[in-house]
Picture: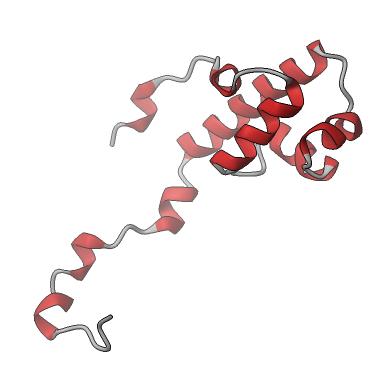
Length: 106
């Protein structure tokens, strides 16, 4: 492991570092989370599951499920697997919504 960063490397560092703060705050990220949450909510309601009953089936706190449905939580792949397990669906069904790819272009 490097104990110091060579000076030569420092001048190229900005091209290698991804600014996660701007990546997380883009409008397309918010739009995607909102659409994901809406689709998740539609599936949850179609199965007549409350947040509490779903939380027992998938080991995710009911308050977190609420935040996911409102698009306020950016979740991991492990959480997607847990949601699918609790809803008794394939994980790809959680992504069954249209999202314009133009929003991803710079």
